[in-house]
Image (cartoon, rainbow over all chains, first blue to last red; front, top):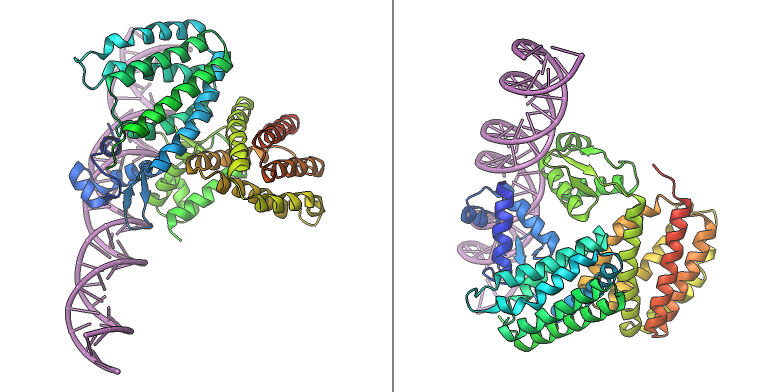
Length: 213
Length: 213
DNA sequence: ATCGAGCTTTATGTATACACTGAGGACATC
DNA sequence: GATGTCCTCAGTGTATACATAAAGCTCGAT
């Protein structure tokens, strides 16, 4: 693994997990010492993070971790609704039905995953991730897929702000199941509607439970 | 101006203007000699270009200029329709009417700009650019604006493939005027419809006149 | 003649030294 | 005492030397 990948992964993880809080200045020398690599790979990692929007270059004086305000969350979900709504509709038109029928069935069984044996909900999020990937593939549009991928980074960050309690995850799973079902049924308008519904509920939950840092 | 900015601007321009054709391998040493800077700023420029999608890192063996196929154009416009349609609707809801009334009036006079005195259509494209900027500002959504900006780079590249004859530009100006008018009227659905119409005609024109490289 | 192994070459990946710029503080002067 | 100027310093921006790995070629063996 390249040193720049290592630096990038470490910094990205630290920012997403809110170990590096917004406003933190990431000095090159400091980070290169902390991560045990030289300045060059750190520079590359920082420029990649800046391109993603996780950091902002503070006018030649180092880069700082980007903040996420309440308005940002609204904007983020507005774009997300646009992109994922369209994606769900396209997936319903172009996707392979068996794939989404399978995902639908699995999502209906998702509550079984939400016992207390896995506090990080690893299996659950992996399943939801598979739905995202299936949609990405079904839409046959690399530009749209790319736009959604770059959004998801920020959304994971937002998710960490909210309390993902079992009750919400149960509801979310059934909303996801509805999306998969609509795609499997080849119904674009229904798929889009199910997505809109899910995202609105998601946003409400985030805003209701989010804890300011 | 930083050397990395210079390298970035030069390479970007060369790619957009099709002076560097798709498939061209951009070797760091070669480009650093050509541009008169060292490898470090060239590396940064190349990673920025790759993040934008103008180049692709070819598995450790240099970066190559990205190709744009006919399918890519379809995908590009599919995403563009999604984003700009939403943006036009939001602008109609949130924008300052006088701004778009003014742009509407100017766009109606656009045919005057399309005389033969400016073969590059500089004034014309500047006016259209001002409409884009006005929409970007009106939507009050930095994430959506950012997504559209990253798309426009590719669209400029596509535009260079098509013959932007005076006839098409006349029609496009009137389509743009319709969008501005709908936004000024505060009618989101109309603004979105006008945008859809414009983009479909744009795409048809590109596909009809495009010359393979 | 063809295939494969190993070497050579050439490119990127990394480290580090040097240059430059901007900010902050201390000192001197008014 | 306040303000302005200069100096210092910390940090990024750039250049370059070195490490490393992959692609292609050559030579040999089958």
